[in-house]
Length: 430
Image 1 (spheres, one colour):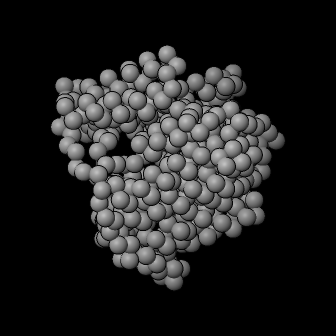
Image 2 (cartoon, helix red, strand yellow):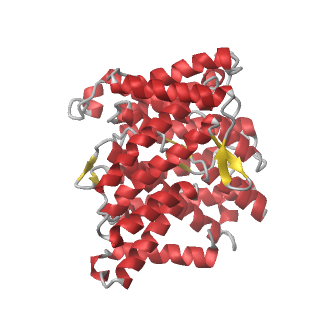
Image 3 (cartoon, helix red, strand yellow):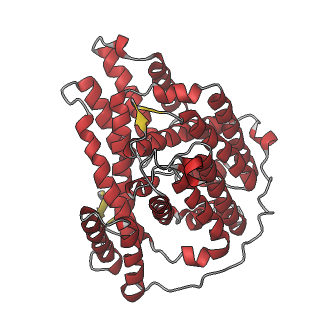
C-alpha cells in the first residue's frame, strides 16, 4: 500500500527511512503546538481551543501535502503570521479576533482560486534560477538563526541587536554536544543520525538541563470556543482589505519559498520546477481555510521539513507520519512537550550548514543575478521573514535588469511581483 500511494522505489527510499524522517521533522517543529496558543492567547483567544486547532490544522494540512501532493513537507500555523495576527491586527489595530480569522479565511479562499487557475504555479515557475537558489540559501540562514536562538547561543542585545548567550549554561552546551554528535554520526553514515542526536540531548537534559518528565497522556480540551467563530462579514468591512492583502502576500511567498527551498534540498526539482507544485499549493490553500474555521492563524509549509529531508525523507509518507504525530499530540501533549528547544536546535543548525552549499550555483560574475540572490539570502534571516527576503530580491532583480539595459531578460511575472511589492512597501508599509 505504501509503495502504491507514495512510489517509494521511484524515490529511492523505504518505509523505515520515511518514518524516521517524519519523526525527525515532527520533533523539530513540535514547539508550535505550545507556542501558537501562547501567541494567539495574547490576542484574547482561548488557549486550550487554539491548542486543539493547531494540532488539527497541522495534521490536516500535512496529510493533504503527503497524500495528495506526495511531498515530504509538513505544515502548521506559521510563526510570524501568528505574531502579525495577534500583535499587529488584533492588538495593534483593535480588530476582534473573529474578524481577523475571517481575514485569514478570505486570504485562503483567494489562494484556492489562484491555485485552481494556475496563477500561483505561474508565479513560482517565473522565479529566476538565481533567486530560487538564493531562497534555499536564505532558508538555511533562517534555520541557523532559529537554531542558534533556540540553543541560547545567540540572544537579543539592545546595543548590537544580537549577541552571544551565556555559554556556561546547560542548554547551549548540550546543543553543542548534540550538533557535534549529529555531524559525526551522519559523516559515519549512521542512519537516523539527526533523530539520535535529538533523543540523546533530550535524555541528557533530564540530568543536566533541569528537564522534568510531565507524564504521557492527557485528554484534549474542547474546540468549541473557536470552532467556526470566524467573522467573514466583518472581515469584508472597510479598512480590513489591507490586512487581507498582507496575509495574502506573506502567505503566498512564505509558503512558496519554503516549498521551493525544501524541494530543492530533497532533489525533487526537475529542470528547476516542482512536478506536482499545483497540488502542493492547492493543499496549502485548503489548510489555510480549514485552519481559520477551526480557530488558528494561517497555516503554511514549515522550513523545519528540511530536517526530515536531510534524514532521508523523499515522499508523502514522511508528511503522513508527521500528520499522525500531530493528531497523537491531542492526547500525548505532555510527552511531546518534554523535548526542549535546544535538543532540536542542533538538527536545524546542521541542516542549515548543508543548505549553504547551494551558493556555488549562483553565477557570481553576473552582478544582475548574484546581487539580487545575495539580497534575498541575507534579508530572509535579517528581516526574520521569508516573504520580505523574496520581495526585496524581486525588486532588486527587476531594478538592476532595467538599469543595466537587460529588461528583456526579465519575465513579465517578475515585473508584476516587483511592482506589487513596491506598491505594498510604499503604500501599506512592511
